[in-house]
Image (tube, rainbow, N blue to C red; front, side):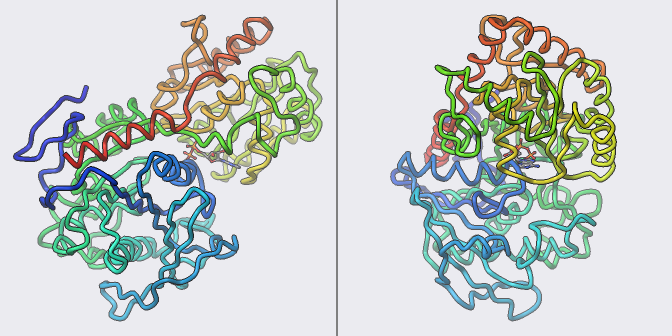
Length: 514
Ligand code: ADP
C-alpha cells in the first residue's frame, strides 16, 4: 500500500515521495508539462519486445492528453534502414566522456501523433546488426554505448534548450541519466527544473559491470561508488543508480512493484527497492489498440469484433492451414508468441509439449532466444508436424495471426513484469492461460474462480503439472461453447488500452510538479 509520506520539504500528493538523494531543482510549472523519454528502443523504429511497444505507444497516448512528449533513442542501423525521415539537426555535439573528442550527431523525426523523436547517431556505437548483442552474447562495449547515449540525451536537451519538466528513463540502458542529473549535470540551467522518473521494465537486466570501468560512465568515483550509490557486490550496477538517484521509480504492474521488493523477485535489488518503497509505483502497461485490434488488423485474414466473433474461426482455419496442421475446428489451438527464455516459462513448455499434445490440441509457437529451448521445440515439432508448428523467428505478421487464430494463448512465465501478449490475446478474444505472477496476475481473472467476470485461466506453481492442469480446465471450458463464448467476450471487454494507464502517468507527472 502506498501512503502519503513527506520527506523534508518535498511531498508528492499521490503518495510517492521523491528521492532524498536527488538535488532540489526548484519548482516545476505543472501546466503544459513536457516529458522527454530516454529509451534504448521504441516502436516502430527499433524493438526487441514489450519495452519497445510501450515506449512507442505511451508517448502518443500522453501527447493526445495534451502533454508535450519527446523521445530520444540511439540511431541504430535498423532505424537508418527503416527509411524514416530524420534529418540531422545537431552536428558535432561534444560528449564529455573519457576519451576526448567523442562527438554525436542528433537527428529528429516527428511521428504522425506529433511526438518528437530524437536519435543519437554515432556509427561506431550504434550501426550494428542488432540492438544489444549477437546470438553469441551482449556487445562487449554496451557500457560505453549506453553511457554515451545517456550523456548525449542530456546534452541534446541542453543544446536544444528543451527544458523538460520530466525526464523519464526506461530500463538500465537509460538509467545512468538519473545519477548524471544528480551529479555532473546538476547545474545545467536547461535541466534545472527537470524531475526524473525511472521505469523498470525487467529487473532481470540490470547493467552490471566491473568496478574498474566506472570512468566510462563519467561519474566521479568518490560521489557515486559506494553502497548507497551504484556499487553492487564490488561492481557497478546501472539499474541501481536509476533506482537510487531518480525522483520516482515506477514499474509496469502493481503486482510486480510489490514482488521486486522480495528476495524471490528482486534479483538482489530488493533491499534497495524496499528503501525506496515510498517512491515506487506500479503502473500497468497499456496497449496500442490501433495496432492490436482485431477489427482493423490488416495482418489477419478476417477482421472481427465482439459483435461478430464467428469470423474469428476464419482466422483459426487459416492459421491451421498455413501452419501445416491437421486439427478439427472443434479442438482448441493453443498459441504462444514469446522470447524463448526461462523467464517466459518456455523451458516448461518444451518439457510439457508432448503431454499438451496428448490433450488432443494443436500447438503453434513463434519465438526466438535460448538455443536449447529452441532445439527441444524443434525436435517435438519435427516428430509431430501435423499437431505442432514451431517457427524460430521474430515475425510481426505471424504474431498477429497466431494471436487472432488461436483459441487459447499460453504465458507460463517464471516472472512477468507486465506482459503484453496476454493483453493482446484478451483483446482478440483468445483466452489466456497464464501463471499468476506480476502483470499476468493483474490482467487475467480466472474463469473457474470467478465465472461471471473470468477472462482466462491461471495457475500458481511454476511446474508442468500445474500448467497442464490449467490448460485442461481451459480445454474443458472450450468444450462448452456458450461458456467459452462468455469467457472470450469478457476477455475482449477487458480494457487495457492506454485510457487508464496514461492517466496514471499524467497524475504522477503532475504530482511531481506539486
Ligand atoms: P517481453 O518480456 O519479451 O518484452 P512482452 O509480452 O512484454 O514480453 O512483449 C513482447 C512483445 O514482443 C510483444 O509485442 C510480442 O508480440 C513481441 N514478440 C515476442 N516474440 C516475438 C516473435 N518471435 N515474433 C514477433 N513478435 C514477438
